[in-house]
Image (tube, rainbow, N blue to C red):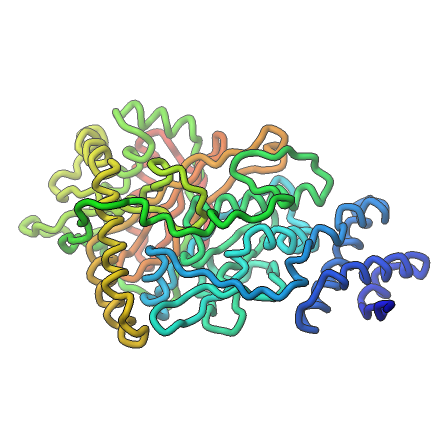
Length: 495
């Protein structure tokens, strides 16, 4: 039976009468690979029409544009009914229980290109990439005992950026996605609800998206580690819960005393301010080595100094400056999972010990070596698994306030701030001419007044501060300490 021709009114406005028959045949082929609601189907047909038109306007022939946007790239992902669902990993199970107006546990990864983003092509890149990450093409749902991720049959859209990074997502709506892709000038950003993944998995998704986008624009790029091939079928190991690999043994590591908190009132709008300190990776490493530490240790020392200057110090108080330091557990277990697989340690110094970078460095490095060793981190993983087991048969309606109380006790109050170092993001030589830098943004905490995140690409390191207060004491102090070390940063961010 011959398929009824599709309707796409926008095509008649974008293409000449000579081009239109060929375009409509192309859109008919696209429609054969879609079994979505009428709304999403129409939007995806328009996406293809706009992308064809944009490639042609950039100088490509109709044949080349159609080849790049071959309907076969859709596979059967948008055609067959998706009935799969995914239980949350151990770390993710607490996130939806701890949500509030100001807490969402969202983080962002951004790639800055050397040319402005072409939105129509980015939309098609996202459409193709989502089928390779089926556990990301989901929405969060409430079960009787736990939340879970349910597969969603929908179009995943890119949007112009209009809000501050890591704004709250409306994950409670029907079919609402748990990630968002936004663009601004030359920046492509993906924001993830932490139930989906951690920084490692998010980096793979972003690099796969950017590589696909560049290839649709004509770049010839090789496959490389850290990027998924869209021709490969998804592997179930990519969405497994890897926390049980910690095995049997002692459990512990959560209990801690309340930490010193920085000054400042927390306004309603969150995050209140996002600042990027752009630095030379080479100069930053030289400064770290000059002071006898690693990059992470050096930044922790500057972090401690800035926290001290932004806090009200009581010399008689025993409260310490305590910085949460996430650790990627994949360095101990070579798992394939994209899910959360990180633990944390805490670096602690009393304000009286926070003096100079050189004086603090031996103690900071000793705490890093001890806290990031495999056994203490796995003890914390085992305790996380046990907490989840203890709560597993409690109905969600009762579990929510219990988990929120536990999370509050173990959450922001025992830390002064967080420093999350994603490390070096790598790209093949052929892709580097298209990319300027990356940055990594943590979502706003509840009680802490500022958190830090950092990532590097080549000689460009971006240190990002997310603020929860109008007071500028912390960021001013951090800037001054960087300058004192000969690292005057180039500043960007919100006003």
